[in-house]
Image: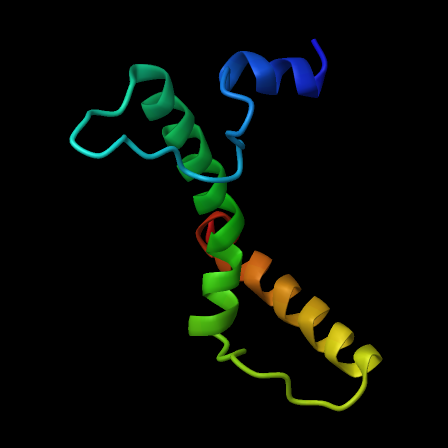
Length: 94
């Protein structure tokens, strides 16, 4: 099954997208399929955004520090490597 076919199967409405949450109509309730789709979106979003939270909160990367793309890119690569070590700290300790 192709990606487009899967998307059409999960989202029968043509205007709906898999990257945004589905909302209930005013005064109505959310359908079962829309709730399942929202749950899948939330799981993926949480896994993707968690490393960025670590970069911002643990290592304080809120603004770019250097001028130039190469230096900022190297800084981000280093921070993501440290973030990976931070996520695996319990496994590495044993």
